[in-house]
Length: 153
Image (tube, rainbow, N blue to C red; front, side, top):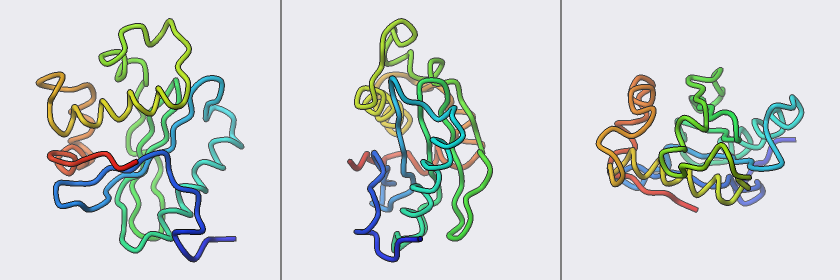
């Protein structure tokens, strides 16, 4: 059953607004001990994203799944979720914000916080001149949309 109203849908873990305040990305995050490797868990997370995207009053062009192994970004055209546009190694991206990323247990809230730090770095370059995966994000048209944006929790 598809939701018909955005209030009827579980909210994503966070969203990202562009510099004009338009929602351009929603994200689901699963830290220790959960992940999206299990087919059921990944399918359920994707269905939750689709429910939210369909119930939104405007088209949200990107959706993201983050677990301890992968950051996967999809495109949404208003009716269909694409195959993954990019798939990044989570540790490669987020180790810049938590040097001990590979040696500690990273729970969902902290994983979301680290992911938000990365997105904010892409938007404002607060931590690095060229944040991790900038090239990949630019290739799918997301980097340009993140510039000057903000996290929405």
